[in-house]
Image (cartoon, rainbow, N blue to C red):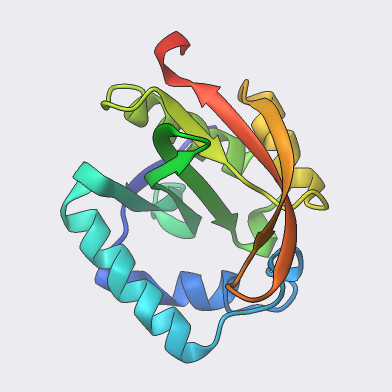
Length: 169
């Protein structure tokens, strides 16, 4: 995608969280929006993660010559069924959805994490989130299983567990 890039999440990027994780329509597949307090806490965590990328990193997706922020993508350490790897997630502002932005940003992220020391990248979208599950398929993730989870803690959520073998990418 022309003009699309990712850069480490920065102090001024909280508004992207507010328009994604704080928006009820954006969080329909994740049991509702996060509170302002939770968004502030997540913002501080993302800024810290982006300063030291060894345990993961959040990125802001930018587009066009003006490098306008259009979403977030990131990775962090995880373990599924005894398999160590990275977990990933993404959000794109509503006006940029359906245009291949998330898929292109995820391709950039996969290229980055493939060079790191973990064999797998996992994604765990809600079973009802068709667009996110389609991105996993497009990028070559393999559906491992469906599981009952909680997100946020205490709220049940049925998810698909997708795994990408980073050593074969």
